[in-house]
Amino acid sequence: MEYTVNELATMSGVSVRTIHYYDQIGLLSPLRIEPNGYRVYGSAEVDLLQQILFYRELGVPLKKIKSMMNMPDYNREKELEAQLNALLQKRKQIEVLIGNVQRTIHTLRGEDDMSDNEKFEGFKQKLIDENEEIYGAEIRSRYSDDLIDASNAKVKGMSREKWMEAQNLSEQIMEKLKKAFALGNPASELAKEVCDLHRQWLCMFWKDGTYSKQAHKELAEGYVADERFTAYYDKIGEGCTKFLRDAIAIYCEENKKC
Amino acid sequence: MEYTVNELATMSGVSVRTIHYYDQIGLLSPLRIEPNGYRVYGSAEVDLLQQILFYRELGVPLKKIKSMMNMPDYNREKELEAQLNALLQKRKQIEVLIGNVQRTIHTLRGEDDMSDNEKFEGFKQKLIDENEEIYGAEIRSRYSDDLIDASNAKVKGMSREKWMEAQNLSEQIMEKLKKAFALGNPASELAKEVCDLHRQWLCMFWKDGTYSKQAHKELAEGYVADERFTAYYDKIGEGCTKFLRDAIAIYCEENKKC
DNA sequence: ACTTGAGTATTACGTTACGTCATAGTATAT
DNA sequence: ATATACTATGACGTAACGTAATACTCAAGT
Picture 1 (cartoon, each protein chain N blue to C red):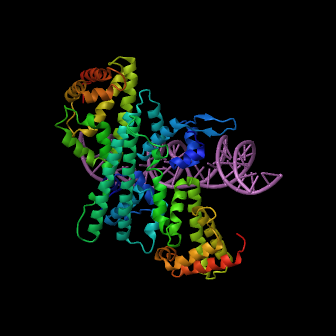
Picture 2: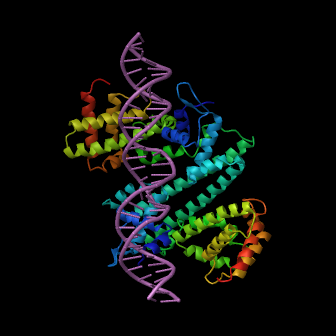
Picture 3: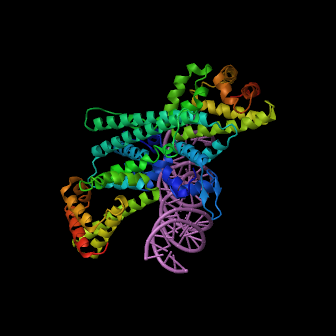
């Protein structure tokens, strides 16, 4: 089947302007353009738009959607399963919110009592969920299994700004690690920068005073043994986890002061 | 308890900037401001912020949130119940989306088959939900109970742009009706304008050819008898539904051509 | 053949809800 | 006493469109 902008818009429930916009930013190009300049969309585009809307519903920015869909190893089925997961997650969040509203109503009637903190259950939850999903493995490493409770407590009390800072650090680490790994020298300046960022990052999750060169080094050793970490860092390239371990070992030897 | 910006932000999971912004636009003012210029928030503000976040989660624009919370007859408990309803609604929508993703996965595996239209189930649904919630009574009037199936079918096939047009019309009607009602003359020019807009609005939902002055007049008669309509239009002021009926009666008498 | 209404395309500026500095004063811990 | 953390006030940036304004094109009625 083929569709005009209006048909596609009506079918999917978005505006014609949105369709135009998605074309403009290169997110969804028409199948072809008629001699009169009209856009024509086919089944493939319909499926793409559906994908886009799923992502959008989950709050993914269009830029990320675009880059994800352009990834060479993009696997539609895998993505759909991830989306299914995210939706189940979102349903949970909404259920928490529903419980929250109900408790708030009861509190208003004096049949219950909520702490100020509890009143935001379901909103804050988001942060911890992201935490669990994206960096769960990192925080819940075997080495630091004994630290995880402290870590979780710290995360729950962590301000949004601090959390964002941690996110930024994490992105920087991955970015620089990628470059350092490409160079191949775990003793390079760039590698040291990565290690330093990694130290800062750890300190945001570990209880104060927990950090030491020894602990840092041992954690890195644990990375290689733990498949959750190898899976995470080897996304950059095979052997990257080992590279990181080596770099951290060197960093901890050289950097005597803490 | 009293809180600083940072404490409130951390507690609720929003950014400090957001707190500042909400103050700036007058959505959430601090309890007081310290001599040093620092904002201080109390329990009442915590509750307000919670309300705001519930609304925000449901996609209500901040302006509307503000005006809603400033309404003289604002009833927290009633609003909470409305929010509960909306959340239950949203959960349903997510469940539709979950079903959609699952079917899409099966379709991808060749175990199922979906029409292009079905692929957007759960997205489009939103329109019809809004429809039901906001103008349900209007469309499902007693008079037009026999027309409702046709109406629903028309709504489902209605493009988003048409729907928005209807929304706009509806807002204009309410706005002008308010002014006309204030003047008090159902034969005024303004009242006629209202009637004409109302006619246009009806024609968007009624099957083509259904409209006639007679039908329009009878519908208006029905308004007064039906509590759903009186509740809806009397929000403007008591007796407004009757005023509208009178205006429409006059309009239909005067306006011979259709 | 001609008008008319609906659909389409292309700028272009407006808007919402903040994010992100930049700058500067203030509180707190060592 | 000085560094670090928190706060305030601008001011500019941004994402994802909405909202006209203008100009074609097309299908339908007369």
